[in-house]
Length: 111
Length: 114
Image (cartoon, rainbow over all chains, first blue to last red; front, side):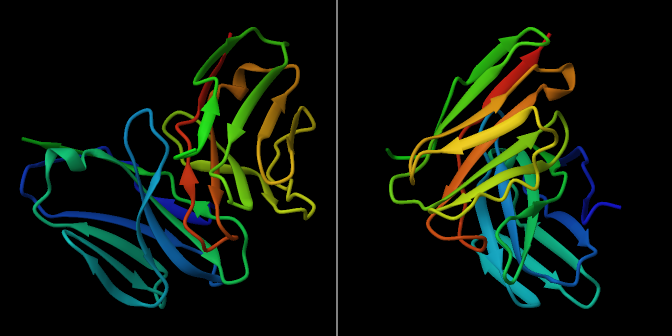
């Protein structure tokens, strides 16, 4: 079993839709959670970073963490064609030195 | 430089040949990571360098893989006797600290083993 599970999609939505991306993890030691966005033929770039359970909002993006159920989500409001990319969840232990990534979800927002 | 630079961007090689991939991290970043991304898959950790500490090599898949880093600058990832299953994008990332710090990724080297 992978330590971080993520539905690879692909996910296709119309412009303006609300997008929900999700990951589950199995290691209780994971305490920090990130979402990276990866455009085609580019390296991933950090989108959101959170530690505690609950919601963290940044513009159209909201990251949600539920440590009790080991479930993390990323919501994109008013999705735009420029949001079309692969979204990777990532997590790390408190004293860890390396991120563990999910498989990534490929998102396409159609104009 | 302005970002993490990797070279070459594409490499096609024949099975059994050795390849060397290069990474120039952001100046001042003490941590450097190599990840492998196979088609349609997530990032697989390979190796981690932090300052002058011994590298964490626990992700290297076989003894055909090795990596070096000169101080806190350039790193090279070497794959000996390449196999077709080595075909992937090899991503390098650097950060100011360790672990929880934001990682800055290069665009990767697309390796194709024929």
